[in-house]
Image (cartoon, rainbow, N blue to C red; front, side):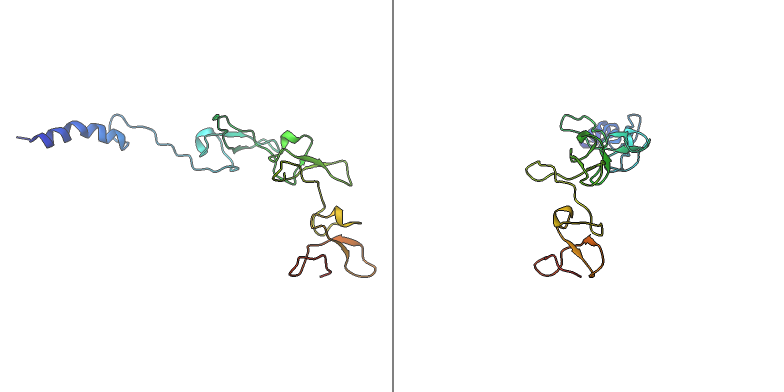
Length: 159
């Protein structure tokens, strides 16, 4: 004879098996493993359950969800060419000072778009043109270039 403990266990056994993924009530396990920005083929592959088309090429990427559980469209990171603010992750599409092209740039903590500046190594004519705010001539007859700030006080000094 089975005692009351064994009877209860026998009654609960099918329920416990279904919860563990075994038995007739087997549930499909979610195998989402891809993070934001990784290539995907369907929503189920993404941790966020959002797989959307990349605007740069025809591939699809995992994207985050909003607090209203809507899938966000893929947006371009900083440094990519753009034609409208909505194309950029930062919502900042800024015109390059020396050309007609526009690039995605970061935002400040006050939600202002950071102006586009040249990276280190580019030719320049003033400190304001450079991301490092440092435009110097390495040799007497060489052109001015944007260079990283150096030294303990991060000053604009020749290397």
